[in-house]
Image (cartoon, rainbow, N blue to C red; front, side, top):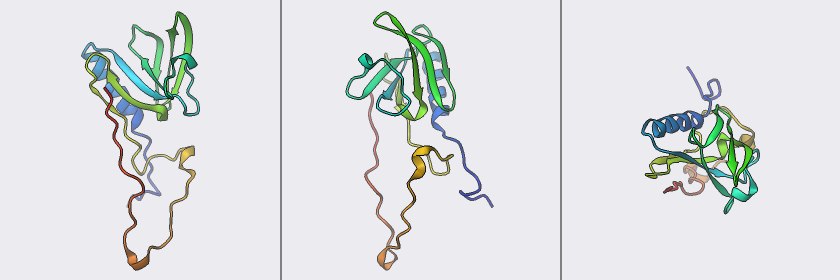
Length: 147
């Protein structure tokens, strides 16, 4: 029997990102990604960052050597006429959408059973609850609408 301890899946986020970029390109639209510029490992021109976020046009005509693997989105692009190497960890990509229509999606958090990352260092709370009542979920679920 497979348990969460014996079988850990890799993150589904890079697969969703690649599929959505392909879908946007197949429809001859312009793929953009919304990035949390404050996350470690994000390399973008500081002048492009607004409110801690940056929107990047990743269309083939706008970038050079676009590469999306399971860990990183990387490419070179021009910002204010100057070529700049861009590197974005997959975890920093918040959403992908078509510029012309706004269609796309916010990338969901990883599901339980994914391969642990450095951010997974918080141990679970094993404190028993009185009367065996189930613990309340921490925080509210969140979904961001990106237009």
